[in-house]
Amino acid sequence: MSGVTLTIDGAGWRDHLRATLAANPGLVPVAKGNGYGFGLARLAEESATLGVDCIAVGVAAEVAEVSDDFDGEVVVLTPWRQGDPVAQEIITNPKVITTVSRLADLELITADGRRPRVVVEVQTSMRRHGISVDDLPQVADLLDLVDFAGWVIHLPHAETGRLAEAETLAKATAAVRPAPIWFSHIAHADAARITADLGVDLKLRMGTHLWLGAPRTRQVTATVIDVHKVSRGDKVGYWQRRVPHNGWLIIVAGGTANGIAMEAPTSAKTPRARLVSVATGGLAALGRALSPYTIAGRKRWFAEPPHMQSSLVLLPSDATPPALGDEVPVEVRLTTAVVDLTVIN
Ligand SMILES: *Cc1c(COP(=O)(O)O)cnc(C)c1O
Image (cartoon, rainbow, N blue to C red):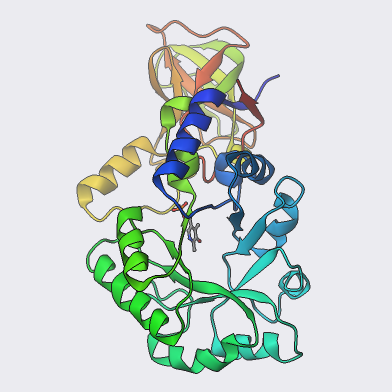
């Protein structure tokens, strides 16, 4: 077939998954969004094979996408909201753990006498979701009305002050009620020490490092669909821009529908890091942009912005053009990519 293909060395990848689980007792695999490029069903299946008893999904609607392949507990990372009918529906599913991040929501979900299984999120310096540490004591009585699975502490990636914050918040939760702490984005050793000191269980939610942590075990390639000899000055593409040099126009699979040449906004804080991000990434398109396709040994320039499912890439005349049907490496960000085919060897 032609398209964008993710090829995985299954044995190598699964070795990494098992090693990561062994090094991180209490690990809760996160399967959300595009499934880190692998798809949610695949991650659910791999989690079942790993033998974990709980996984995390991002939003309520994703529970249905993992439940055929994983029959343990599923925690929903996005906090429950009254206006979400799917969240309303699954809160009674005994295998679902609902995240609650507001006192008012805890009151709402307990009002009719159901005892939903919940974790309660504490607000961190992320300031994304959570009950503020000052309000935590007000949670205590409400906890008797739910099947309480523990506290959620989701920390920022920025390291300054993170460990101290984790310790302070963890202590505050244990003062209200000692219960498992579901951490995100903290080193396992730190989380393990904090929870051991408090005598509570550790759960560590992890996605990127688990699924994408062994880059040598995967390869993303795209099929060459057409090759045309072109001369300097020839007009090509939707925008009829002129080719800057003699050579070849390579039509290769992969476009905007695959997430080709789309980058998340950079978190880079230094000008140099920002420059690197522009140079290696997609969309700069000031004039032309370097494409993520490696053809004849290096990254080549886009002739114009990628189309929906194919891209036009320029190859100079001193390079040997690929043949139709060849697979060429393409660099994609797997958390935003949609591949056409996944092959596990
Ligand atoms: C997505 C997410 C994770 C997993 O993040 P990674 O950086 O992919 O490991 C953990 N916790 C929460 C709350 C998340 O939303």
